[in-house]
Length: 504
Image (cartoon, rainbow, N blue to C red; front, side):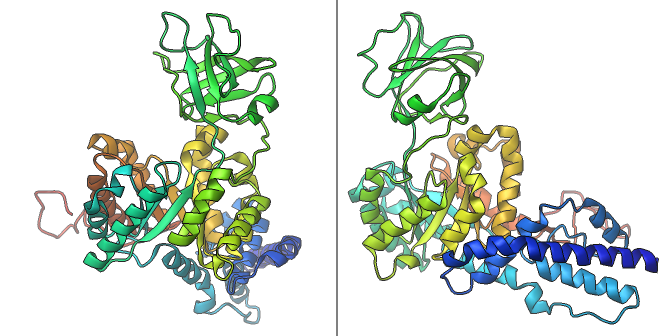
C-alpha cells in the first residue's frame, strides 16, 4: 500500500508542476488586464484550472477515491489548495515528513470571493435560497407602479431592462417606480440594462400565393433589408429580409441558417448578387409562418460585426447615468470588452469601473474566448457571466448546450465570478400558468448558478413564488457541484411512527 501511495504522490507532484508551468504564459498575458484589487488570485486560479483541465484526471481520481481522499471533482474555486492538501495527506499516509498544507481560510478563500462578488453584483440574498433572482421588466412596468412593488415584496434582487424595447422615457419611469418600491419595502433592487447589440433579425417576409407556412424541402430567399420588393424572385420562393448585410456577403454555399430560435433550418444552395437561396432541411411538421423581428443565426459563418451599434452607444448614455450595470450582448472578443469599457469611461470618466458588466455568452466565439474576455472584464469592474441559452443553443447545437452550460458554470467558479442562468426558465409556467415537469428539473439545476433570470409573461409572479420555493429547497441539497447532506425526511428510521402523507 505504501508503494501505491508513493506512486500517487509522485503523480500529484508531477501534475502540480505541470499546472504551475502550464499556467505561467497565460497569466503573463493577462497581467496588463488586471487592475481591480483582489482579482489577481482569482485570475491565477482560473489559469490553474484551465491548465488542469488539459489533463485526463479520471485514473487519478479513481485511485484517490479508494483511499478515502478528495476525488478532485469539486476543486473549481481552489485548484492549488486542493492539490496541495491531497499531496500533504498522501505524504503523511506514506510515512514521509509532514508537508505544508493550506489553512482552512486559504482553502475556502475562492468560495468567499465568489460570494462577495455575487453580493456586489446582485445585492444581499432574500430568504433561504443561495441564488439571486433577476426579472425582465415588460413594457407595462413603465406605467404600472405596482409591478416593482410586487417584485420587492417577493424578495427579487435585481431587474433587467431590455434596451431593445421601449425608450429612455419608459426606462426612466420603470426606474422611478423601482425607487418608490424600494422605499416602501425597504428592499434594494439592482438595475441591469441589456444593450441590444447587432442582433441579426428578419425583416419583411413574403410567401408564394396560396401558401402561408414554409415546410421542409421549400426554397427560401434571404435578401437585404429593404430589397424584398426590388428584386425579381421566382413565384414559388418564400423570401425574407435580413436586417444586416454582413451575413449575406460572408455566408458560403453549404452553410446553415437558423430562423426564429432554430424553428427553421436552411442550407444555402446558391449565392446571388442580392442575397442567398437555401433549402429548408428541418422545421416542425406543420411548417413555420415567416414573420419580421425574428432571430437569424448563421452558426457556420464567421461574421465581422461591431459589438456596439450606434443605438447601443446612444442607449449607453442613459445606462451609464441610471443603471447599476450593463448586460453586453454579442460580446465575442477581448476587443469587444475594451470597446465597451472605453465607451463607459467616456460617459463616467471618474467611476465607470463601479458599473457592473454582464457578459452574455451566446456564440461559439464567445465560448472560445471566454477566459480572456472574463479577465478583461473582471480585471477592471464587477462582472458576471450570463449563459444566454437561447442563441447559444442555436449556434452550437442543443446537444452541445447541455454540456456547455456546465462548462461555463465551472469557468465562472474557477474565476470566482458569478454566473446567471438565463432563457426559458419556467417558461411554460410564466406564459401558461402551469409548469412542465422538465422545466421544474431545469430550474432545480439552475440552483448551482449565483443568479437565475425569469422573463416576462402573464404568470410571472406565480413563477417567482414557485422559483423562490424551489431554489430555497435546493439550497439544502446542493451547493455548486457539492451535494449538501442534510438529513432526509422522506424515509423515516425503522423504529419511527408510520407516516400517512409525504414529508415536507
